Amino acid sequence: MLNELDGWAVIDESKLQKVYTFKGFLKTMSFVNAVAWEANRLMHHPDMEVSFNKVVINITTHDAGNSLTDKDYKLALAIDELMK
Image (cartoon, rainbow, N blue to C red; front, side):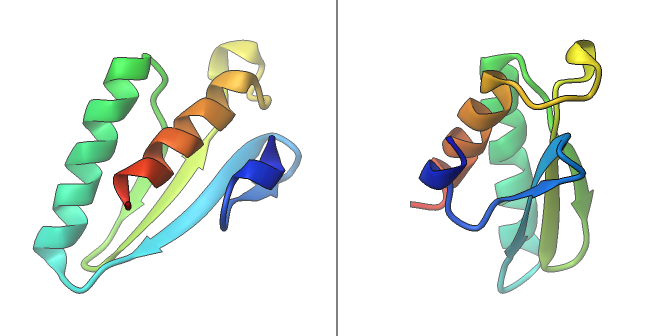
């Protein structure tokens, strides 16, 4: 499924990671809120590092021993759809 994802990297064979960059704080926070909404809808919540114009998203399945599952790839695809 990784080949379906644009710009995502597998880190330590246990999480998906992608960095998103924005033109300012409000766009950054709008994206973070949209990700939170989508993650809650899918009941799968990423770790996010948020700064002024950048968001680093890390996705792993904690209840599967911090490993990658289909839930991680589905969330990554859903997050990418927010940017379209």
